[in-house]
Length: 344
Image 1 (cartoon, helix red, strand yellow):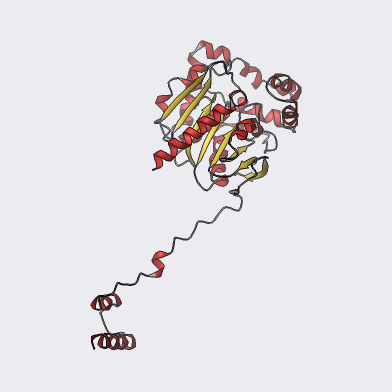
Image 2 (cartoon, helix red, strand yellow):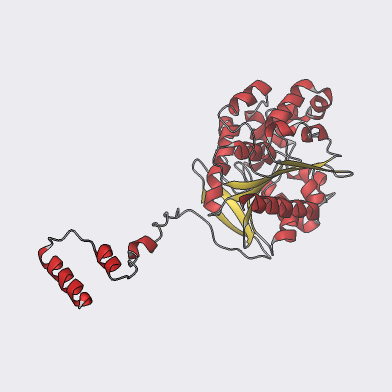
């Protein structure tokens, strides 16, 4: 009888909309659970994916390449593998292929992304020297990262890629969860040493020639082929020669030197609005036989990083990714593990 009364009462309410008792209150009177609003179980609308994005898995055994618009320029980007994304930044005078030996170590475990940075190989090469200042180079990578991964990435950087990687790591809300500098100097530490350390001043003397007009007529594919033949196979050297011979590629790389003085005061000003300390797990790797960017660049970095580890390697020179790719891969795995542990 009680059930019939409640049902009849609810029917009258529906007809005349004059009752203040809610459906949930009626259900409580019957001792029933209030049914959940089906809308409550719906996830929020997914954010639209940029049509320029590349989040797909890639072949593990070969490089897939695409052009990606990052704002001011379009970058050629290489990809191998599937899983969590690792992004690699090359230095001078290399290009994305400089990481191929490291990729060989990791392609069955991760999705590996390596762009040709602005001015190199198949990427855009603006004519103006001012287009290669550190803020432009940094913004390219800040913009690229969410386009190549829906989740934050581990960023790995070498040589000139180092200052750019550090700048990205200091950028608030950058799309990263870990950072590795492999013989890639912190811009403030490097600038300080150039101004105050006689050994680094001497080691950086080559930069004056690199900045000189027409340096690319000497620093051409033949010059670099001779220098790199020590650690590149004939097959790899042919791939490098093709990249070095792209129209404007050597000028584009040298413009990184021409556009940036690395003056300490100017570098401080560039970093004024950034995070004072990198907050993601960071490891610095340094080959102690580096004759261009000295091992003192791996010192004093606690001032710039909250969670820092430093590993040095005897008998390893500047070209660390070519010399000890298995060690670079090991450190990447370790930083990945630290990042996962920190997120739990």
